Image 1 (cartoon, helix red, strand yellow):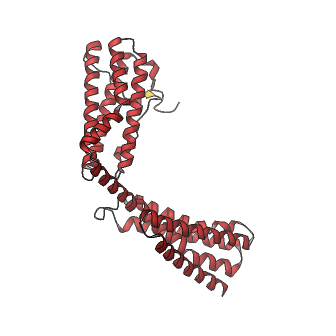
Image 2 (cartoon, one colour):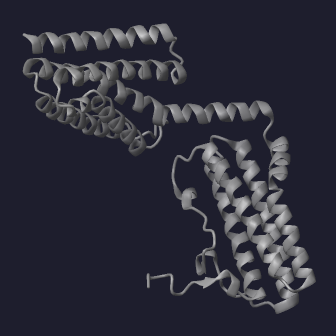
Image 3 (tube, helix red, strand yellow):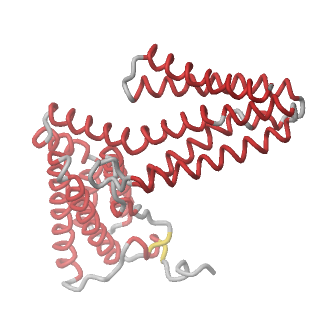
Length: 325
């Protein structure tokens, strides 16, 4: 049997006292998570931090009601039981431990937390034989499932539309700085800089296998180089560009993808078929770069297209001329 699973109990085997104890510990954990979210957001998104503080206070009130009910029925000694002690019970993903969480990610996790808690209380209420306990658990189920309304009230109080728009803009800017900008730089480097060696090899040898090997080496090597360069040159503390690991992964992976796109067609043994498909892939890559620049970097479409197509055409021509010569 797998370690850790043998000691877990099924939810259906828990006594009513243990169900109450599980609910108490769950509310305590959720309140701590919400306060961690609030602390994480306080610097950049103070209004959203106030919302999560309000949600934590709501969880504290739930916990107090559950403790009072436990004291009335079972006394002051509450069994120690947590989510991880129950087989098949939902667990909170430890995303709150990660740095540089986006505002949308935190909002999504909070929504999932309330939905799962509502399901738990609904199931727990169905299993309770005590009328007062059943009523309390039913009320808490309704409260958790209705927390969307509570969140709307907190938003109206703490997050006016102007502040929400400002926070959303800041979150979008952080996404662009951490993921889009280094990823776009990598895609441009991988798509454009590998054109010359790949097509020079193709037209010099007319050998798809050799071209494929050169393309793989150029793409993977460029990806590793770009990834390490992006991660090492800026730790993100002063620039605010976010985690160097995330930026390095975005840049390195997109660089490799950019080069592999027009290298992999040379898996096809027929040279001209492979080269024709590679031409089409290059066109799609350049179009994707133009679209990303226009969509996320707010570069006018025609200017972005001119810059990308001109640069790609010059590098491509250099590769063909060198290979043909």
